[in-house]
Image 1 (cartoon, rainbow, N blue to C red):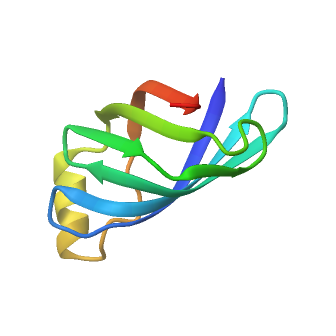
Image 2: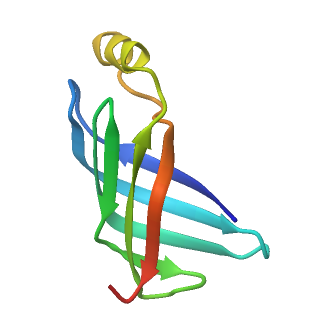
Length: 101
């Protein structure tokens, strides 16, 4: 099990991105991997995260790839685009690969 947090620079309106993502993965053994330079693309239905590399922690030097479904409501994302900009994006990860791709 892993908890994934990311900081994303992207633009509205949908699709969101492409944007640059910095990802921190907190693994269940207490270790942490940091991914820099990944590209994020998302919309109100799904997302992809790929490229970049693991700059510290387990899988150092590896390349990430993730796909999943958006769980944030399309209404919430649309309102955020018009008002404050998107400050959070909740996905469910369907597939996550980290290592030599």
